[in-house]
Each structure stands twice: as C-alpha cells, then as structure tokens.
Image 1: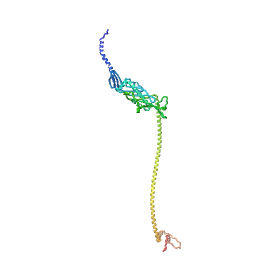
Image 2 (image 1 turned 180 degrees about the horizontal axis):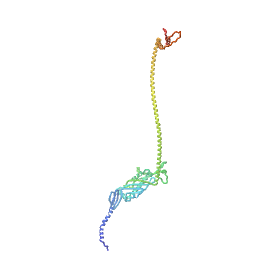
Image 3 (image 1 turned 120 degrees about the horizontal axis):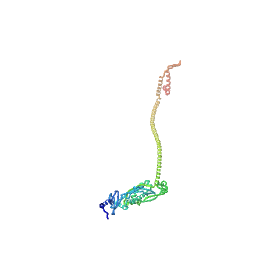
Image 4 (image 1 turned 30 degrees about the horizontal axis):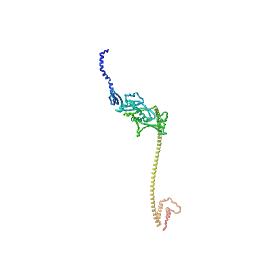
Length: 450
C-alpha cells in the first residue's frame, strides 16, 4: 500500500523537479568555466592540450580556452640558483614554475681541491614552435629544469673548475672563473686535455695551500719533479673545440650566469689561514725591512747633507780665498804694469834727457872748443897780454877796495928812535907784494920792454 503524500510534500516535489537543473547549472558553472577557460599571466606561457587532441601555445596576457583539456604553465625566463643552506621558503612547487633553488654541489679544482659553488643562472625560453618542442619533449618545467638545465650547470661548473687551481682562483682569478662559466654555459664546453710539465731543476716551488695526503710541501708547495696542467683542445685553425650545450638546440638563451661564492673544504681553508698568517708575517717583516732601509737612507741622507754642507762651506771659503788671491794678483799685476809703464816712461824721459844732455854737452863742448881755440889763437897772437892786464887790473881793484874798507887802529905802537911808519905805508907795501905775486902767477913781465 503506497504511503499518503501530503499537499506540502507534493508542492516541494513539484518545485524540486523544476529547479534542480538550473541549480545544478548554477553550482557547476565555476567548475565548468575553469574547465573551459584559463587566465595566462604576464611573463608566462601556457602549453594547452584540449580533449579534441589539439595542442597550442598561449603567451598573451588574458583568458584563453582549453576545452576541458590540460594547461601547463611555463615561465618565459627560468632562474636556477644554488645555495649553501636551502631554506624552506626557497622550495618551489612544480606548478609554480618560478625556477629552481637547489643546494650546492661539490666541484673539484685542478689540483684535487674540492669546493661548493653558489651560482645563479637565468634562461629565456623560445616562443612558438620551438617552445612547443620543449613542452612536448619535457612535458613540464620541473622536468625541463632537472633534466636539461641543472645537469648543464653542474657540468659547466666542473669544466670551469678544471681550468684552474684553487690557488689561482683565490689569488685573483675570481672574475676569470665567472667569465669562463658564463662563456661555456652560452657557447659550449671547452674540450681540454691534461699535460705533464717537468719542473726546472733548482727552481723553488711556488707557494700554494694545496697539500696531497701524507706529504709535506715545505713552504706550501710540492717538490715533485713534474706537475700537470690542462690545455684547451684546438682544431687545425687553432680555434678551441667546444661541446655544444644540449638546451641550446631548442633555442634556449642564457640571459646571465653568475658565481656568487665558492666555499672550499675545511682543510684547504685551514691551510689558507696558515698561508695568510705567513703572508701577513712576511708583509710585516717586509715593512720592517723597508722601514729599516728608509731609516738607513735617512741617516745616510743626513750624513750626506752634513758632508755636503761642510764641503759647500769649504768650497765657498776656497772660492772666496781664490777670488781674493786672484784679485790681489790682478791688483799686483795692474800695479806692476803701472810701475813698469811709469819706469818705461821715466826711462824714455831719461833717454830723451840724456840725449838732450849729450846734444847740449856736445854743443857746449863744441862752443867751448871754439872759444878756447879762439882764445888760444888770440893768446898766441899777442901773448895774452890784454887778458893778463885786465886780470891784473881787476885784482888790484879788489885789493884796493879791500884796503879801503879795512878798519884803522886807534892806537899806534912803534919803537923809539925808529922811523915812523903809517897806515898808508903798510898798505902800499902789501899791495906791492900782492901785485908782484899776481904778476908772478900770471907770468907777467912788468919790466919795460918785457
């Protein structure tokens, strides 16, 4: 027997039959919309596969149809970086497609020194058919990163580390390492070969912090007779041969590649500290030596300065004395020249006077000779009577004048009975005597006819 349906129940059943389809459509519309459409963000590309078997690439910003198919989102530029300590915030889910952040992996430098490298690389994906090939080959970004990009980065880092030693890197080849890493990541890996090089006998080992197990290396160097180096393999045109990166075949471009840090093993770090300490002590010793040398140069300079000052003073005195001596010499020469000139003038004057005197004497002698000759001739003519008479007259005149001026005595004395003799008689007798003497001296004959 069927249960009775009340009018209320009948009313609800009636409206339920009418509203269930619109309600189902209203509730399922968001799900239906998301199954038919999706939104492509800026900087992303979407690989769409519809239920009809069609594939397409959507790289425009906005809504696009996928018709109940599958849509895989790819970022146009994928970043891959490695860090020493991976943070939970750095983990990226596969559907985020922001790239990949992984822990560092070890590399081995030339010389068997291992280290961990922090790096960052950014790749730009192609568009169109080239991207569709990548999407078909790798299906999702995480698979592409882990299968294509990460192995390429690891291989490139190790190939770059094989080009140099850890000592070379820490001695100043950091930028070279980063440049080689980016170069090989873009253009391919160098093919290298290992070569043994013999050391020159007697050459001291280079300083290095690399130690082989169980060996002593003196001043942080190894004393083996040979060492191994790597060289790039070249073709007949001397162009390095490269191994092409696989991801470059799909048109993927390397935007940038950086080496942010290299962390060597603890043993090498400890040896680096020893080397740094030794270099610091060496630098201090070198500075002390330079200081001592500078002080020595300063003392030498001061001594040379004093010696030079004394030498200059002595030289100045010497120059002054030499100048004074030269001046005195010049003055003496000038004085001697003046005296010589004066003597020469006096000599010339004396010569002139002598010549004049000789001439005058000659003239006087000639004149005297002439007068003497004349007198002699006159005397020979008259016996020089006139001259003798003139001379006698002059003598008598002189005696007469003297007698006239002779004083008269006041007292006259004479013997008694003798004849009286006066003043006049005395003078007459005196004059007679003198006249006779003068005549005798002149050989004058006063006799008549004499």
